[in-house]
Amino acid sequence: VWNHTKSGVYSVKTGYDLLRSTKLNLTQERVLEPSITGLQSHVWKIKAPSKMKHFLWKTISVCVATTEKLTYRHMGTDRSCPRCAGPVESINHLVFECPPALQVWALSDYLSLPGYFPSTSLYQNMNFLFWKRKEVAPLRPQFDTFPWICWYIWKARNDKFFNEKVISPMDTLQHASLEAKCWRKANKKEEADEVQDESHTT
Image (cartoon, rainbow, N blue to C red):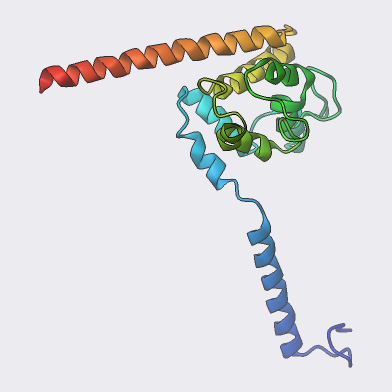
């Protein structure tokens, strides 16, 4: 029985109409879905080491090997968080919602805004770090340390998972801040040397 005609008999016209309406609905759904392309492309413009930019890109692309992702790929059965024993270790949980990670963000220069940052949406959190936080607090932090913070939250998680080593949120933040400061200083020196070399050659 064909439900799309009164008689219950299939007709090419009703089949074609159904196909067109289905395609139209799918197209509209695709348009309404949020695009992550802008976030992914912005990662490569951030001033940070390549490994951190790659990690952020993997985070946005949902390619980080959390227990949830490993279970989804049939590489384990335990989806719980190795740091806080929460029921599911999603990527957003790992970087933003896990209590040790949440403490790192609370101790950092990045403003914690209840219901806004950190939020339950990975993309909203990244959007905040990339652009929105400048609208909320344009003078803080003095330079972007969030790539280092995300990276060392991931490293602390792996130390707990693989080595049973507990790294405190304060140690994570201090390590991230120090590494960011050293990287900035080294890159400023390289830029200054390049400028000096150019002035000598002209």
